[in-house]
Image 1 (tube, rainbow, N blue to C red):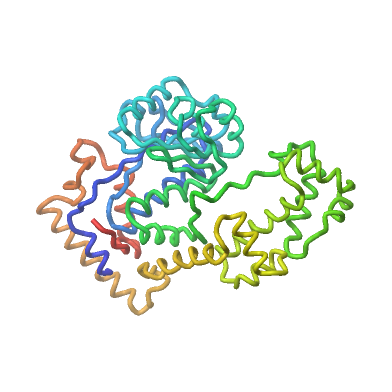
Image 2 (spheres, rainbow, N blue to C red):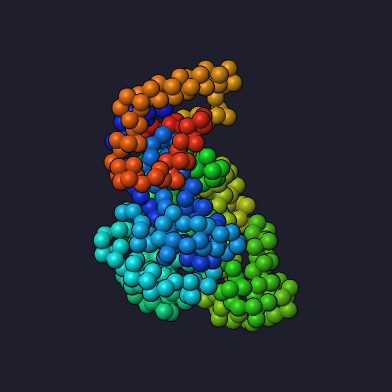
Length: 411
């Protein structure tokens, strides 16, 4: 067992954070899993119960996800344990998926000082309860327009996730993963956050400034096939650019008609939109590859690196070198993460397994004399007369994993 793993086996000085997920009917499973799994992995890698999570429904009855899978919750709303954070898990038809009882319960939790959050379309419910007035929020692009129209006091954005004081909201899909990693980083540091992302094979941890990509058909409407066709041509030709006159010709339009189409539906000229696509591609290459800046410039259709740098700074707010150096700092952090099982020399594996078994036996003997660490931990479910939480069960199962307790975090 690694030294850091042994260090994490003593009495815990951490106060476990309890997070409740209020499941709405037809919630999206991928968003819920993306929010819960980072919590599980934080416990596994630290060897501590840093987080406990609970699923909640109004009356404690099973609820169906949008994929048809039925989930039996841990508790009803009114029998739930005291929670530090409550996250509304939304999905399909969110405007008809909640009740006044749920809204009132959320208001009560907000008055208690509980941090409130939402994933996928759940922000609509918080906004309906008046709990996002004056806050920044993110939601799935399908519901941004509805949110802005119905709740003018809510500051909606197209960002992947938003953390504004005691509110945290994210879009759908895997975006909750990035939001929860950001929360874990704030609470327990970069080392643990980076190690979790590596376990989940994330090429990078997306930040609060990253935006969700809204399908052009949603922006322009399905009645504009010419616009969709031209943008598709632009996206397919970012390195070898197509002249505006050629683009108009391919779409069967005049240059003037093309510019009118872009101004009406995308609020910019065709050339400006084309430039934005190239710069977004450049940002991906800077963050996700080791290509020299001059090669990134060429790959995105720029013949001059200084011109590329000028355009990039104007659009993104930072020069390409700073975008790249920020990515380098993240990589340097990863180098300090303890080795995963794939990086441990094979000849060391039997010895490490033997140490783990011995430590488990010693830990068991100690627990018979003085009780398990979880029984002495603050906010322990056992002290409250309740069964072990799902998080405790998951942590017990993870003890046999090579990565258990492999990341030392400050107490």
